[in-house]
Length: 184
Image (cartoon, rainbow, N blue to C red; front, side, top):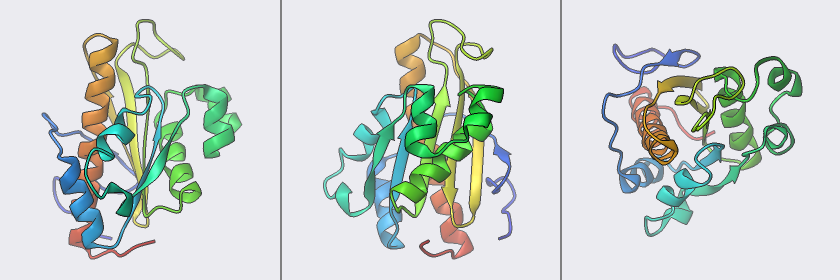
């Protein structure tokens, strides 16, 4: 797979778009056009990503489902995140986000796995300040992560995380389409 200048690259930490404003219907259109599906693993968003993706009529054709693994131990139990990784770094880490994305992709038998983990506040967690968030997408072409330093109160951080996550998925879908990749 070759990287397009300015586009996300697998196996690297990507820089997020300045003002993400993804349209869930567009995500479903991109998925349907390639016969693909997506699934989500959520932590701090508590289901906001799944809620956005299921607002579109016909979403069941391309959205497999979601797991809200809010507690750290559930990230290991439900998503297969390595317990040693969680013990070493805590739940708020780019490798944890990547493992969550890979775990939901495998467990939901989806083409694309999207995951988020971070600190919505009001207190720091695992040595990370409030607003530290990692997003990841896993697909046949690899796994990519992004780091987002978000501001605002707890609710705003959670909603911004949802928007950034959907934007990340959108950029991966566009890149994968350009690269001519197919389903799993």
